[in-house]
Image (cartoon, rainbow, N blue to C red; front, side):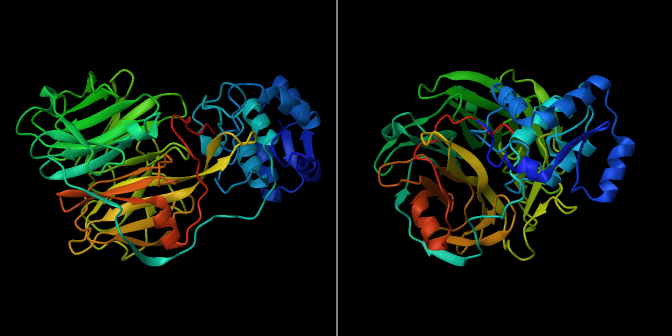
Length: 470
């Protein structure tokens, strides 16, 4: 299938020249830069000419490759504005290296993550060309809204902290995990959660005199990750739903301090990465091998971290400075937008920024049977006010501040969690939050979105959906 809007290529008058592809609409200075700096060997030039002259046929051939998966995202949208337009092609052409180039990233046009920007990348972009189209983001500022919790859970844990959902193949078997720092356990709640607390998870790997603090679930591999503080300083990995210990990461090799937390990331190069926080440091490990990839020091002290597979970014809230959220590339370098990696507005946060989650918008694929992440959605961060927690909502795509959600009776929140699995009574999934170290509240996303006047298409079941590959 050819990408939507491909017929607009003719309107764009895509031309081949001795240096490659030029668009008549390019600004003059861009054309000059391109002519001076673009270098391609003869075979690359001929390939580029062929793509320009036979774009449709080339696109059909390339689309048959397993690397072209428009089902999951619009590949070629380098600036993430919802289209593949002249600006995206300009960026790609300016950064064109031919096969064998090194050091290029996706924002520069390296769509298949091999270090170069070559005819393969260019062909994919041409095949997905839409032209500029209006921004149809679904969100607007809504101010402050308050909702009531649907469920309140009081379990066996003492000083609870972090939350995570596991989306079981059968929704009735889906689970909510709640870590308990003071008695080294993980509470387990089975849907519909209320009056459905199972035997907590305890394990010798949790040690004694430690904080069982962070928790995360990898839905693709059915793995539960639990972080344990010093003196153990480790990450225990369990199979789901068997709860068998299958791996341990770090194992005391570094000091994870008192409140380590965790984030999981599906890298577009095919690897799964684990981010483990330790106050002012983030340790990065390969989930498959356990080997250390590296570490980085974020701009501000942190406890929590979340990765956005679609945009290939990592976000961490400033835990104590009340400044907001900071964005990074997977390697920990700053992800800059308008010269800054800061995501917030002055005065939004009044207390410690704690838990952070994503809520993703989904669109229907062409077969109308499957869904894919379309890049829209929300970033939600708990502003840990003692009187009432403010859950601050930001636009996932634009970073715009949207407003504040409050849940009646909820304050001093640490961890939050989200599932978008369609559950009986909760077609858009659930949002969960810790209240004052003692209980967990759960509220349906449909209630939240309706109260805030937000519109976000969602899939009926997102279990085991592959990450975006763009």
